[in-house]
Amino acid sequence: MISFSHEPAPKPLRLARRVGRMPPSAVREILKVAEQADVLSFAGGLPAPELFPTEAIAAAYSEVLANEGRAALQYSTTEGFAPLREWIAARMVGKGIRATTDDVLITNGSQQGIDLVARVLLDPGDVVAVEDPSYLAALQNFGGCEAEVVPVHSDAGGMDVDALAELVKARKPKLIYIVPDFQNPTGTTLALERRARIVEIAETHRIPLLEDGPYSELRFRGDHLPPLASYDRGGVVIHLGTFSKTLAPGLRIGWMTGPKEILRAATIAKQAADLHTGTLAQRAAAALLRHFDFDANLAMLRGHYGERCGAMMAALDKHMPEGMSWTRPDGGMFTWMALPKGLVADDLFAEALREKVAFVPGTSFFAGEPRLEYLRLNYSNRSAEFIDEGMRRLGGVIRAHLA
Image 1 (cartoon, helix red, strand yellow):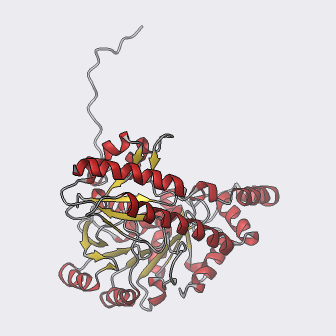
Image 2 (image 1 turned 120 degrees about the horizontal axis):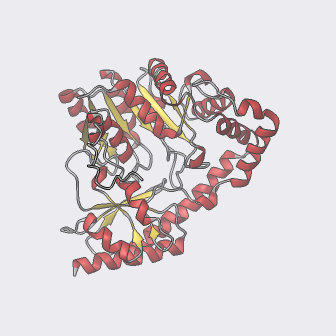
Image 3 (image 1 turned 30 degrees about the vertical axis):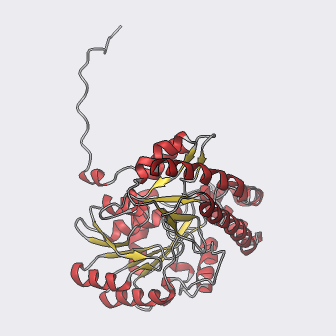
């Protein structure tokens, strides 16, 4: 028998230098411990699984396998299944976005859209302008491309237009990235009066503007605001959408529309990455949308999420000590909390977990100097009674630290 007990440890393999700029997602690492059965977790950005249209999706898969099984299990075009792209294009036109079937690229969730745009636009050292704070996975992606990610001052009305104009003048960014509706992590919405002005800045300086819209359909209070792409006349706005929040994230179906040269480049990059998004899932989604009342499903989701957001606001008002503040979203899945002065969200996390409640510390969402006093709470994945109990536990942890 050969013994390997005294073999020296092998030298580590050399990785690309960009890997060092791609730290693991703090959210995903937290979920490994926070999603235990006995923990009331408000950490994940999760839609409510009990609201997934499971039966309708199952019927759509059965229909596709019965009637077009061979084609559904075969390779397909990179651009995506034409009937699905046609449905999405019509949906975009209804929002004021100029799009045809040929202007839609199907992606593996909108997350892949971010990756493809970064691949085809960013060289090492390029500047990317983002909100402050911004979506964590986008920051990972831009960092992995060795770009310099620069935060733009943001407030309750989203990205500050004057601050963006100053950054454009001083640094000439290669890309502007915005989540305009019910932003992750803050839950804030880009103000109506800022939207056209931001697109105008991008058009004037010919800077691609990446509009990430995974939550835009989930408004449960107030009027829907026009997407940034609806203002685009100069061909600079790239719009991302997804079914992850409106149907089910497991479908992994998103899409991209935008300038033709970027779509062409992104299609080639996708060919190199995965050839195409899953054929069966695309055809099942198209079959589902032929029979399924998508807008009625949205109305149902908005009702439930609005109720849960209201429960979260009431629970925070009830259980949190003085000196705290949080955003009051009009849609989406998150609220963003500021702790009393002197408290650090990362320090609270372990103790909160001992009390069987979890959140996401806000430090990882900042591209520049991290702010230590913020945390993100998700309300879409918990019923009202669990939200109240979870905030009671979290409030107790915060009060103990203040004492």
